[in-house]
Length: 138
Ligand SMILES: [Zn+2]
Image (cartoon, rainbow, N blue to C red; front, top):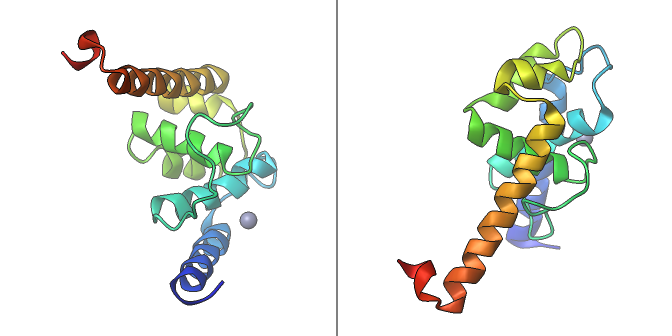
């Protein structure tokens, strides 16, 4: 790794680690993958994620980490601008899964399945458009 690739990787690392400096962890009661992934989400928002970054719709659980949770936070932010910042603010003293209900009106597992459904429907739509079927291009 060298040149622009190295510069981007270093900047991404700084975004990730500096997020840890400023974020809340619910006095260490928040799931570890969530606090890690809020940092990865900052990398994603800054468009510093590399080509190996998880894609929307990947993963088995919202809190599995490994960039899957960052993509889930991206989905939640698409529902409510500033969701991740608001979630972080709520995590100042404690963590609760109920914060998802308070902010987005739905339990986190339901939001996870809606995120997966959205991605599946978008992939299906792209397949449909690519097929040249008349019904898809109207
Ligand atoms: Zn980290």
